[in-house]
Amino acid sequence: MLDGMDVQDRVLRNEAETVAFARVFAQALGRRDAVMLRGGLGAGKTSFCRAVIRELCGDEHLEVPSPTFTLVQHYETADGQPVWHFDLYRIEDSEEVYETGWEEALGQAIILVEWPERLGGLIPRQRIEVTLSSVPDDPGARRVEVSRHG
Image (cartoon, rainbow, N blue to C red; front, side, top):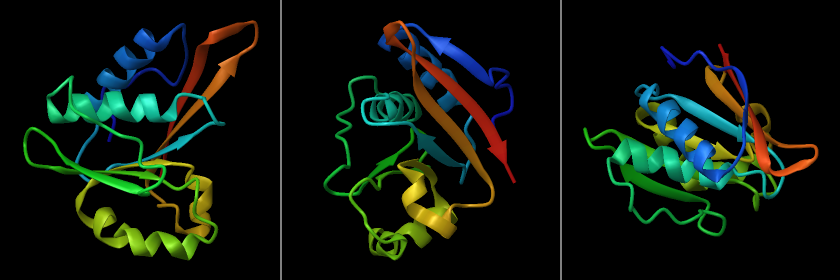
């Protein structure tokens, strides 16, 4: 899990740097890694996920819509590994996540979860946390913090 990722806390000055970081991050992911993305509205979580998915799938032009309304989108990496991208902003009760195929995803896929706090006690014990936050006095920049748990 994230072998070779030596960046724990870093400022990304613009979207291009965020995409570049996300691509390197994607290369360090392994089978069944669970990535929890934290940050407020507009923090760049979906852009980060889009870059990770495109890198994993080997297609920089892949259509990667936000799953805000569908709650989950499925992809397949270049080597056949499933990737599930969840956006849980609209769920009100953590039990609703079961309707999305949550248990199936945990057992077989790389998962990317926006708004993981909506999972409550269902957050995987073994996970990678990515927190994106704004940088004071630099509206285009984001601070990214990466940590492993479990």
